[in-house]
Image: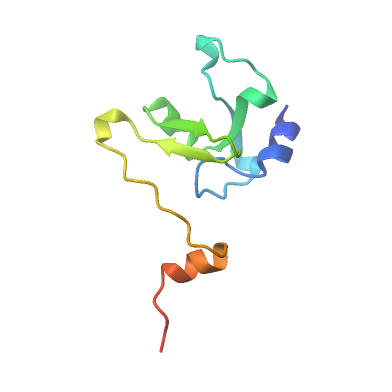
Length: 102
């Protein structure tokens, strides 16, 4: 199970996290006590930093394309609107956050 999750997810599935599989735990996307199955398609890797947040009201949602979005607990107020990625990939995304040096 662990090898299959590591092969599929490659890292912690929390958005923006780069936690290596060796520092991750298998997370039941539907809680096990609520009937969540221990199957690869019903689980994801979450690092030891982010896994406790899921017990504190945070929620991960798997998107149709396979990505994940983290939802904050309702007690922490409304979620910020999602930010659109700049066209052109990661290099342009990084450049968009930093003004050109001159």
